[in-house]
Length: 120
Image 1 (cartoon, one colour):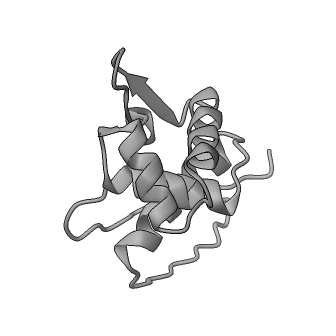
Image 2: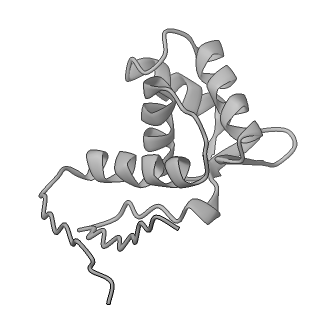
């Protein structure tokens, strides 16, 4: 009979931290490296789904995530290469978080992860 050590933690958090946790968890289990500013950028994008790229770059600069719109655009392109962001449209491109990440951003969010770590 195998003995399982269970850790049960309950944390009340802000929606921003909850969104960032979901992104970090996805990136961790898919071996995707992201920086703190990339994490903040993706979190802000999750809250502003399907936004025109220029407007988002301006928003990211206003919120001091990046110092310039070009830095924000570079981060978005990097996230797209890592398949975290999806661009659509031809003239005025819109961006959104990849649906595969399945980030919940509306209302009260309860995250219930069950992870079994085994030695084999």
